Image 1 (cartoon, rainbow, N blue to C red):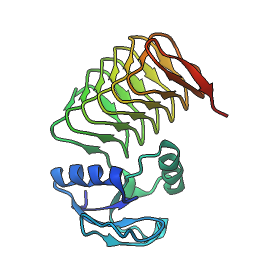
Image 2: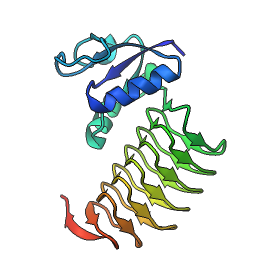
Image 3: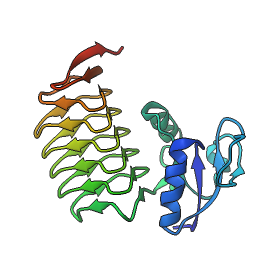
Image 4: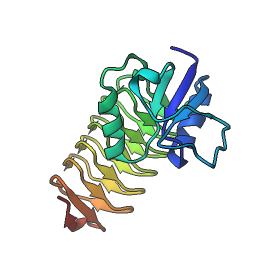
Length: 205
């Protein structure tokens, strides 16, 4: 792997990605974004808008939005420089767990045996993913969330901070689980649920 890395997106979420990259002995080279940022805490070079042919370093899509992260990922398709994942060294990951490219695992996250994590997934600080869970592409497990054993998370879903998903529950695609919610039953696609126990707030289009 090239020791230099660039980032697509440069704001709050990317700062976490940059710090984790540094802990993995990668040197941040610069960033791509819609425009140059006035706030530049890491003194990175603005490399322009992301264009497939202009990226010469290993790159990471450091965008918090599930949908935007997916769109950018698909725009690069099989780009040879995107075959990377960022794992915080203070996380705990079973050797039998599988994690897809462009996924991020933050500090003190726990990923236990036989977990399967797709592409472009965020497993945020202090979250717990128990045995045999499956998290599909471009989902986000927020800070402190707990997935008990055999939980399934669909594509593009967001599991809010400090929420708890009961063992064996299946969460559909593009679902939003509100912070602190306790999910005891399966959730269909495109729903937002909140509360303890979690109940449907509304259905997205």
